[in-house]
Length: 458
Image (cartoon, rainbow, N blue to C red; front, side, top):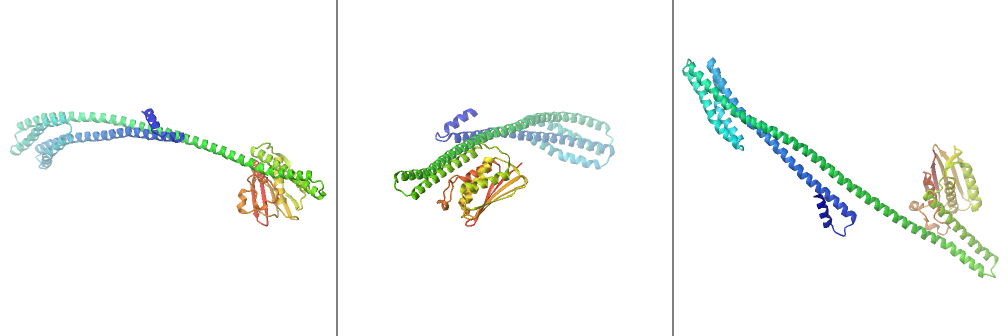
């Protein structure tokens, strides 16, 4: 049935609907179908349970109705005997009450068994016996009132009454036995229906869980697949943008080198100052290209986690050496001030990547700071942490630009006249991430910037 339903649903679903939507719709349809089927079966069992309960209640009502008839006859007989044996008028109250209620109780039994034709016929047989039994009881009481010495006739009436009572009792017992058997049968069926209902509820829950789990797996697969596709697309776009930026950044210095070389080649009578200026242009463009390639390789390796080999090094010695190298190579006109407050001499870091972090931050500070200004490089430590802090008195960074500064080739329009690749802070961010550290910026335009790098230590 379910297989036919699946085939039918597949035929009904629009051809243009995507495979994912078709499968999700199919599974949801299956879930609804299973719920409907199981709910219908469960409703049938519930109805049977309700009917069985009603049948049991009815059987008890029938038994109680016939027990009431017997009890009323017994009350009348006991009252008769008590009156004859003791001559006390108090027994006549019970006697009269029994005679007054016997008809209503018989009618009640007749109404209770209205749906049972056989029991109705039995009541037809039972009615004259009850009538005769009541008549004998009345005759015995009336006879005693007239002649208290008529013992022989009283004995006859009593014996005949006992025979009638036995006949009545046997008939009622048969009806009660029939109802008791019906109660047992209905109870057994109800128990079986209840177990079946519980089983259907379990099957219902299990099927729904399996269908919903299948839908979850399908959705999870589709989401993962879509995310993977989006990641590939973003990566492709990023690479396209990356290579586009690289080609743009390389084209400018290459053009500068070619133009300057052509000028030198064609300028036979140029002054030495003009030749020197073109040579300096060539050297500056070559340096920019070298720096771009260096930053690009560093960023690529940092993103891929290549050559990440942390080891214990003398941190203060390394930082001091780097400051000296930068002062010499950059020809900085700023004052580089290195302050070490590190409590631990050695730290576990990747030396190459730490060099990239410090070099890029210090070169940026030099690049964007005015001459004769102070640049502070503070090295400190806390339990389980090494802290590098570089503070300059440069142009500062706008708050709106801070969220973009770690993206590759991101440069502010305000510094377009200052040479740079836009890769330095991206390299710093990746190297810090590989160390499991963090980098924060505090900056104010026209006042300066403070970069703080925290590297955890075990």
